[in-house]
Image (cartoon, rainbow, N blue to C red; front, side):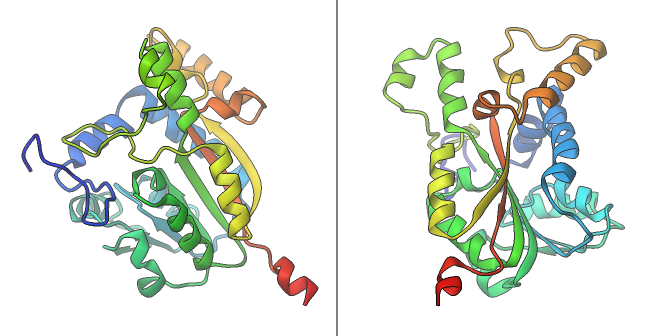
Length: 269
C-alpha cells in the first residue's frame, strides 16, 4: 500500500491490512494503551454478568480482549476482517480456547449467527461507514437476555481534544472525522452518547451500564513521568470513570447493552 493510498474497503469501512504495526503501536503501545487495558480489566467484571458463557469478539484485532475472556473460562470466537491482524492474534492466543474467523461484522449473521449470550465489540463501530446498521446487526446476533459489551470512540472527546490542541476552526466546523487515508488513525465515524442511546432504543436494547475510558489522560499537558504518577492517574480514572459528568468526556465510551428476554411488543401481544 502506498503512503497516499486509501485504506477503506469497498464498503467504505476502514481496514488495517498493512497497518498492523501502526495499529499496535498507536492504540495499544505506550502508557495510553496500557491505561485502556487496565481500566477494562477493572470495569468489565463490574459492568457485565460473567459466568463463562460463550463469547463472540467482533473486530477482535490483535486478540487482547479475546485473551482476557479466554483466561476467565469463556469459549471465544474472534471475528476479524484483516488477515494480517488475525495472523498476529493467532500467535498471541496460542494455547487458549479461541476460534478465529476472518470476517467483517456485516458477514456475521451468516458465519456466526448465534444467538450469542455475550458479545464484545470494542473500538470497531467508529471504523465503519454505517455504524448504525452495524449496531442493528449486533443486536440481532444477541440471544434474549444476552449482553453486548460495546466500546466506541467518543466524538465529544475528539472535539475537546482538538480545542485543547488549538484546532478551533476544525472544532467549530465539527470537521472531526478521519478520512481513512494513509496511516492516520483518526476514526471515520466517531460516535456520540446520544447516537448510542437512540440506536439502542431502535434495536430494543437497554443500556445497563456506561463508563468513560481515559477521562483525564488524553488531556494532560505532560504524560506521567514515573510509576507513581501512572498509579495516581489510574486511581483517578478509576474513581471518576462512571461519575457524571466526567465519564462523558472519556476518549472511549464503554457500554453494557442488554437484549430483553421479552420485547415490549411481545409483552403487549
